[in-house]
Amino acid sequence: MTKTAALAKLPEEIELELGLDEPDDDAALRDRAARTLSVPAESFPHVVVRKRSIDARRGRVVFHVVVGLQPPDGIPLGEPLPREVRGPSRVVIVGDGPCGLFAAYALARLGVACTVVDRGKTVQPRRHDLAGLQKRGIVDPDSNYCFGEGGAGTYSDGKLYTRAHKRGPVRDVLETLALHGAPPSILVDARPHIGSNKLPRVISAMRQRLEACGVTFEFGARVVDLITAPSGELARRRIRGVRLEGGREIAADAVVLATGHSARDVFDLLQRAGVRLEAKPFALGVRIEHPQALVNRAQYGRAHEHPRLPNAAYKLVEQVDDRGVFSFCMCPGGWIVPASTEADGLVVNGMSLSRRDSPFANSGLVVQVEVDDWERAGFHGPLGGVELQRAIERASAQAGGDGLRAPATRASDFMRGKGSSSTPMTSYLPGLTPTDVGEVLDSAGVPFAARLRTALTAFDRRMHGFASEEGVLVAVESRTSAPVRVPRDPRTLESPDLEGLHPAGEGAGYAGGIVSAALDGMRIADAIAARLAPAARSSTG
Image 1 (spheres, rainbow, N blue to C red):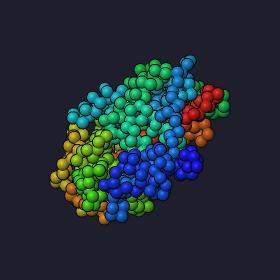
Image 2 (image 1 turned 90 degrees about the vertical axis):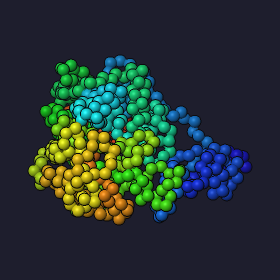
Image 3 (image 1 turned 180 degrees about the horizontal axis):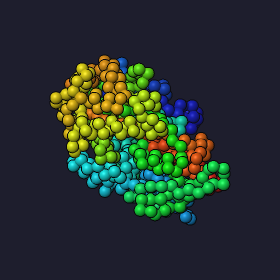
Image 4 (image 1 turned 90 degrees about the horizontal axis):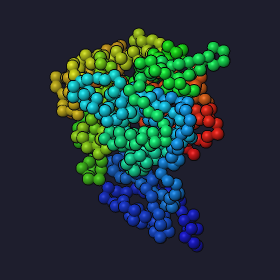
């Protein structure tokens, strides 16, 4: 039998389970795969790691490695590349987060010119504004952890784990990021992560490639109005462009609204333009922080100090009163950061650097909130959830004090229903104010604290020490997703009220995280190209 015929009879891939002390270099994986399949190692000259994960269940810790046994397909990373765009820009993309950036990238693959406008700054000057936020408590409403080049994900971790595989080509998104400088490990890790120290360079590299192809980027360009005209259809209007702060107008046949979950002024803008909005459930709670060593012990057991194990993560879910309570955006070896976008409100978020080597672990710990929950508390209309967020963020700022200090309660005190007189060491640079976080959470009339307390009891049974005095709850984690959805046609992906307007990404209620937002931007690009450049193929080739 020829070598080609022998290869054809082998599976495309095989999953191996490796102990902590077993080698995982290519030669060792090849030998292990050969023994598992009972064939000579020479039967397959190529082994490629396709997926790697850690399994710490059932009291032991092992690595699961999916190994490809067939030769590489030879397709270059990240193909197809953007190409030179010609002619005037007919598309304006509002927001340079992952949704807007990948929409521009996909349009450039198809040769469609666009202009990307963002209210914030490029990554380097944005970094200086974040220093002012951390050290001096100065909130710039247009340049912060939510707004600016790359969006909210740029400086808040760069997690790429997603369950949105049915929404589009996840691998294409990961390859594009790797092509522009993200670590190659994102292509194989089960929970890929870039890190807040590396992601800014990746985002800048993508922009620079697009600029070289003729795509236009404008920063410090906040959109304040939509320009519309009659469409010829009864009671329907059509987009004609956008108006920037200062009065300058940019004409367009299509506008992609990819402004993220925190651009509350955009919701007001849409209402003025007669675009309908719908209230959408979201989740709100706290950041909970522990010493990373506590989390490692709870997750890895006796193996917690093994040198091959990274700092441990966790995922926790509990149902309380028919509402989900769950961990969110868990950051091993991470930092809690101020994510406020309004001067009178306090919001916190989490991030990790690429090495995840901080001595602290933090995670959002949030409670699902439905529309009827906030309506019973007196918040009504499509923006009722926004007003609930804002009310609790203001209560958090007042309880924390000046300089973006955050209200905090030890987990053990929170479980007893009382405030704290002291807090443990923290990664949150502006500092913590010992108080009763439960009062902050319940300040708007929705019973968050009781549901969170019930869930913490269950979480402490699963992870010993989770609700101990070593844990601290920091308020408030309120920007888990937009509490608003902007309806769009499922085929054209346009607003049913304004032809040519494409609500997109997290801010419109169609994504949750970097990868799903990028996928939504690519879908929008394909829909626009099908209308403006019908000869173009799909952006993914």
